[in-house]
Image 1 (cartoon, protein in one colour):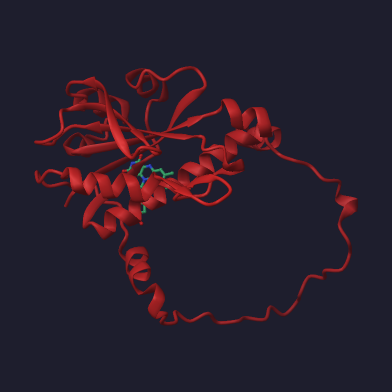
Image 2 (tube, protein in one colour):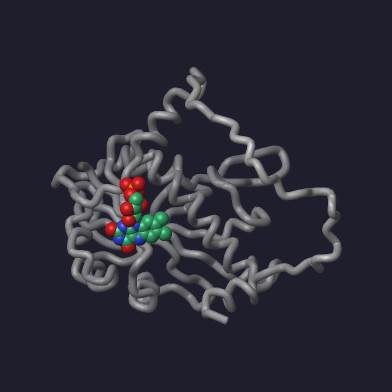
Length: 229
Ligand SMILES: Cc1cc2nc3c(=O)[nH]c(=O)nc-3n(C[C@H](O)[C@H](O)[C@H](O)COP(=O)(O)O)c2cc1C
């Protein structure tokens, strides 16, 4: 068994094959149903955001303003309320809200360079560490040199304590999926603000966890770089 198969296996739920009915038959001649792109006036803006979204790795020196950062972080991650519970702007496995967001500022006139944490309930960022993290980030992101000129980094971290207690090893998959939902919000909100955005999945985990001073149950999952194009 390959490593990934093993990982998939240990995080799988199994149901015996015999429990499936025999009511479905394979089709020999495949019936094709065309699905044209249809206009939908209620979805006009969303359509354009989805269509135009691209990963951008070259950023200008124009700073990301606090107003743009507020829109970006709040629309992507903030708490949303129903009568029954507090959610966020993306779905969350078991509504356990296993993600946290660290914002690393490398280039801003108004914001001090350093590492901040985003608080989704109060819609604010808190400075955790001050200083220039750019050289560390180039090393951490596996010498992806383009990343050095990024004004803002968002690191999505997963907290595994509650989710693994509830879902066992499957909880690990759930956190990755949740991070994907949140990251897509960042891509789309960036597009709406005419900001460039690029995901980084290839990085040195231990160094990034250390840079952020993460406790044992919290791990870095995904990086998003943001900047004006
Ligand atoms: C899980 C994941 C990890 C990624 N990691 C990196 C990365 O480490 N470096 C990078 O430059 N781009 C990374 N990307 C961006 C992809 O290269 C990009 O999405 C792909 O080339 C398609 O381009 P598009 O996003 O413009 O459609 C990643 C994307 C995903 C979904």
